[in-house]
Length: 340
Image (cartoon, rainbow, N blue to C red; front, side, top):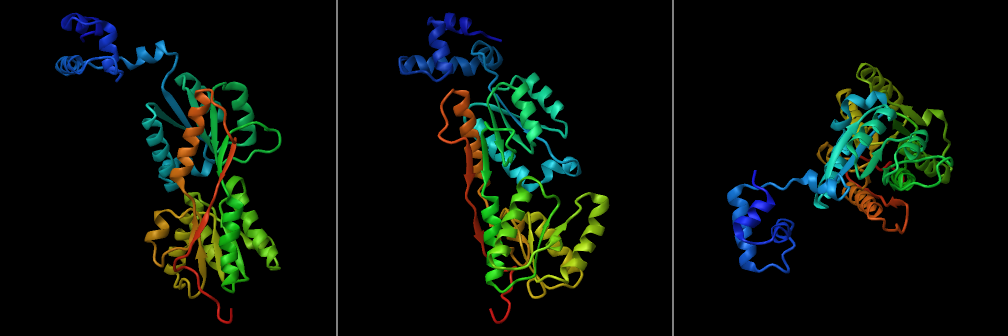
C-alpha cells in the first residue's frame, strides 16, 4: 500500500500537506493542491492507518458499552426492545463523535472488567450494575465511566449516572387510574430491584396518597424464564379477577399480559384496565393501544454519551446524576369506572 511519504514525493509536496488533507485540515492548503491530493488518494485507494494514528495519540477511539443482565434475561438481552433501542442510539452518537463502540454482555462483572480492560477503551457506559459492581469497577477501571439507570446505596458517593424519574412516572400513571375510579390496582414486575423497585415506590405512593389500602397482594411477580412463564401468566390471570387495573413495569409485560388475558376471553379495558411503562413500539401497535409512561430513550443515550466525552476531554460536569423526566401517554387501555 502506498504511504503518505510516497504520495508526497509523487506530487512534490510535503508529507504534512498530505496528512492535513487526509484529516480535513485544509485551511492553509490551496484548493488545487487539495484536489490533486484527493485524486491521488482515490487513485491509489489509500486507507489511513487508524490504529497507528490512535497509538500516536494514546487513544483507542473505542467506547465500551457493558451490560450486566440478570440471569433469567441473559440469553435474550439484545432482543429486549429497550436495550435494542438504547444500544442503537448510543452507537449512533458514539460514531458521530468519531469513535467506535464495542458491546459486551455478561452476568459476570469479572468478565466485563477483564474484557473492557483488554480493549483499552477510552471510556465506558454501563447498565445493570449493582452497588458491589460499581465499587469493583471504580477499583479496577480508572478511565471515565457513565452508568445508565443505576441506583447505588450510600457506599458509592461519587459516580456519573443518567437515569429516569421512575418514581414520578409510575406515580402519575397510577394516579391516572385512580382518577378514573380504580381502587383495586396491582403492580406487575419480574423483580423488585433497581428501576422496577422505584417504579413500585411510585405506584405505592399514589395509592397511599389516595388513602387506598395496599398489601403484598398488590405486587404480582411475573416469572420471565421460558419454563415458568406459562404458569406465571396463568397465576396473573387468576389474580387479575381481584383487581380492576394492572400497572406493568414495562410495555413488554403489559402487552404480553394483555394478549394472554384476551386469549382467555378477558376484554380490555371493559373487564380490566392495563397500563405500561416506556412507550415503545409495542404500546403503539397492540390493540387496544396501550396507555403508558413515555421516556425518551434517544435523549437518555445522547446525554450519557455527551457526559462520557466531556469526561474523556477532562471537562467538568454541571451535574453527575441526571434524572430525565417522564410523561404519561393516554390511549385506549383504561376504562373509566362508572360514577367517577
